[in-house]
Image (cartoon, rainbow, N blue to C red; front, side):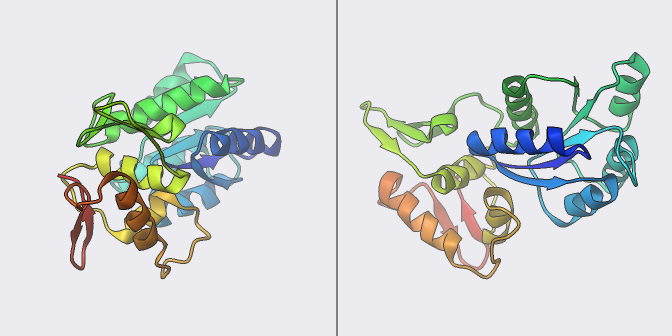
Length: 220
């Protein structure tokens, strides 16, 4: 899953990024509202962590503009201000959740997963893939006969994203945006390569992860 952190304080933004990366998220960051807004417009994120008190454009305005543009990416607002009117203002502009600084990073991860799940097509807690149960937090796939299969971070990222969007064709470009960082070459064959290794582990008959010629991949 791919997260954008829009936070002007380095002392807060950097630790959040490192913690989320250790939890196997792909993370981009912006140090002001103007940069963050442009990044949110250009790339597809699974969640945005948005500070309210930002230079250039404040968080409430960033949220408002994104929602006015029909951008439905889940937004968690974060601020040191705890007054009720700040929370109401954030929710009224379309924020999905709200956290007051300082916050526990484990709780932040739980909130991120919750808003992503609420926004996904597949809202079930357990991710089921054929005969397998998927555990994204540990990169573990367990078969019906209790056989354990370890996936790489990218393999799990692809599988989880396809499962969260079950029934919808997902292009290679979309997978690159959600599973890889912004630095990846969009013309690379890395998605095709990782799909191939993923199938070798959990879909050798190519019956579950289906290729749609010229469009991408789908799990029905």
